[in-house]
Image (tube, rainbow, N blue to C red; front, side, top):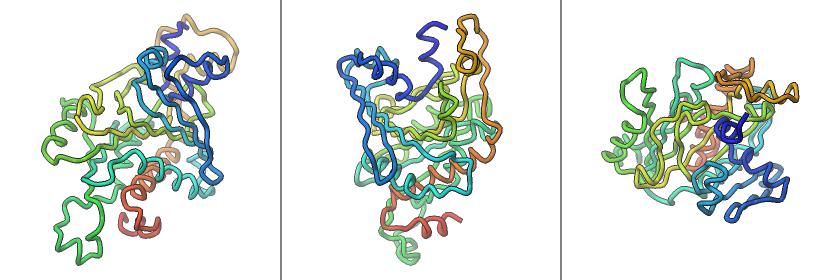
Length: 292
C-alpha cells in the first residue's frame, strides 16, 4: 500500500503521528504530549505548521485523544473518562454564546449512526423563552441547539450546506460536530475518543469526503468529536498476517460484532460529555433526567 493510501484510511491524528514519534522524526510544528486527568490518559497532537499538516495530511489544530474502556461494555463505569472529555471540550469552546451540535452520519447504517444518536441526547435549550427557562429552573443554562442533517443521498443537500445555512440563521458562537471515524488499529475501535478544534471533512476516513466543516468554511470555531467504528479491511488483513496489502484497490470496511452496543453506548458517552461541558452547573444525574 502506498503511504498516501495509508494516511487516507484513518481519521485519528495520533495514529498518523505515532510512527514519526517512535522514529524521533517529528517535523517542525508537530508536537505530541501526554498528560493524565485523574486516572485517564490524554494525548494531544498539535499540528502547528504547513509542513506538519502536509506530512500528516490533516489540517492544523489540536487533536486530543482519550483512551476509554471498551464503550460497548455496559458493566464498566466511564465516569472519569466522561469528566475528562467534558473538560477537554469546554477548554476548546468560547465561554459564552449559543452552541450548535451537529450529528453527522446515516442513522440507517449502524456504524455511521453515531452522530445522529448523539444529537438525540443533547439537552437543547435555545427554544426555551427566558420566562419558561426560569420557571423550570433552567434560566442560567447556555443556549444550545441540535441538528441532524442526514446524508446527501437522503436529502439531496450536503450536510455542510445545511449546517452553514443554520449557522447563518441562528448565529451560534461555536459548532460541535459529531461523526463516526475510521481507524488503522483494530484495538482502537470503540476504545478511543478524538476531540479536535480543526473541524472535519465528513467521510474522509472511508474515502468518501464531503464538504468541510471548519472555521474556514463557517466563520466560527468548529469542534469535531468522534469514536472510530470501522477499519479498512486491507489494513486489518495486513495487521493480522504481517503482509503487504499494496494490491488492495477495492475499499471494504470492517466493524466490530458489538457495533450496536458500541454505537449506543458511545453516543450516550459523548452526549453526556458535551452536556457536561455546556452545563457544568448540572450533575450527570440531572442531565440524564432532563434528557430522558
